[in-house]
Image 1 (cartoon, rainbow, N blue to C red):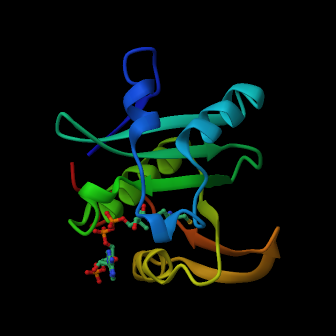
Image 2 (cartoon, rainbow, N blue to C red):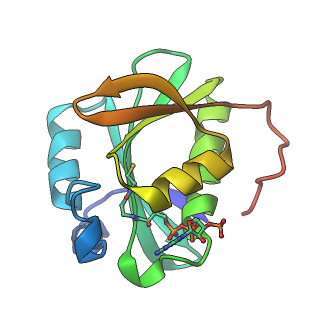
Length: 152
Ligand SMILES: CC(C)(COP(=O)(O)OP(=O)(O)OC[C@H]1O[C@@H](n2cnc3c(N)ncnc32)[C@H](O)[C@@H]1OP(=O)(O)O)[C@@H](O)C(=O)NCCC(=O)NCCS
């Protein structure tokens, strides 16, 4: 599992990734996220998620508070879902945060997104009690490195 920059070589394939129709309310299209990243560069960082050589997902990260890494967008392509890749991609995102000395992952989730909520809760995210733009905020305090999620 690797997180790689979105470049001229992979951006068309990143745009072609898609979620299931009934998940479209839960995450913006990747083309929108890439546009957001360009407008708000360098605070927003778009990253392609690879499993081996296969492009399987996308995430958009935001750095503001030096302690936090915000997961603004996160998706696994519908053809690759349900194989544990979402959990592994989250572990890779957590490793990025740790490598920068950050202590918390933060994200917002659309109410009713039961699969993502279950995944985040199992990973250790808890609701902070905040609601931002209709999304329930969840945060995960990061343990120091050498944790048990270290899938490569
Ligand atoms: C949320 C998402 C990233 C999870 O990706 P994934 O690769 O399918 O996740 P995993 O395979 O690692 O599964 C994570 C957990 O969800 C469960 N799960 C996955 N798909 C499921 C489904 N369709 N129905 C029920 N449970 C499901 C898995 O069983 C697993 O739980 P477990 O570890 O207890 O077995 C993916 O569903 C997605 O892209 N959804 C649309 C976009 C979205 O909602 N993004 C989040 C925005 S906050």
